[in-house]
Length: 98
Image (cartoon, rainbow, N blue to C red):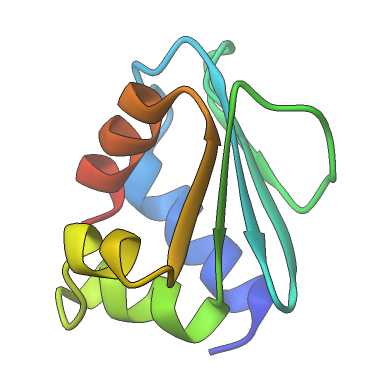
């Protein structure tokens, strides 16, 4: 799955109202997925903008997180997933995508 396909998948999983009331950036090795949950409907794009929480992860590991093949805590502990900013927000988005 490429970045565009995964962006569409995240858009589908998040839905029209993410309930996040914040912004999250998924910074992957193939580009950025930006989630603006301050608006309804939630905007999911590939814009590289400032976010309340930035999650750095490879696209392949992000896909594994989405399918449950990779545990988020394990990914974090082994450095496959890094969070800058609001850790609680990163956990919320993980629940939405998992």
